Image (cartoon, rainbow, N blue to C red):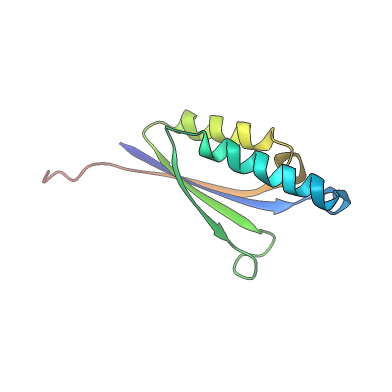
Length: 100
């Protein structure tokens, strides 16, 4: 079975208090966390203007839901993640076709 999750993030007001260098380092830290993930496939989307109260969406796909939970935990513990809030999450699963 394949599990899919959509994580929608919004920013906390505290993000605006970061200097340019702190923000740049925080972004690199967040991206490094994503790049180190080997078991979860993901795509990111900007949602500003499409979904109220959100700025970013991650669509994750893996074979076990706890792997997505671990990724989300790790992302929220990065220096950028401390300034993000999870606005919505959606979880679904798909199974192989009976005709395969």
